[in-house]
Image (tube, rainbow, N blue to C red; front, side, top):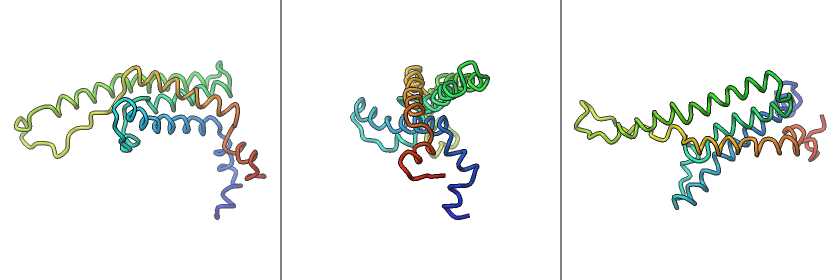
Length: 171
């Protein structure tokens, strides 16, 4: 199957027509990208590696799940069972990010501070410490997701809608 055939393949068109997924992923990506500027403004460091790290301000996972939940609510209705499922999953993800994952990161920090002579064989690399998020990071991410996804869904629509509007897709 060549590229032009792929563009008219029904499952691919359905995927391109999923505005909720597209805008939730865009919200997640923008939240992760914004960490570069948070790092620059608050810590005066230019660290592109922050794009590949977990943790930090804002929580991109929170942006993703809340962007998804709000988009489902907008499209299906806030009384729809799909919204109930999406918001429940969002709350679990956000609770996990600010609770369990954050605690694991704090424990990793303490373990990394132990003197190496306490270990029978010291670890080759330190444990990863930036695992979770503070409640503020999760909260900001949870606002960021809907603030990107909802206007995107309302004003632009799905990637397929966008391709139609600029004349690149006539199917």
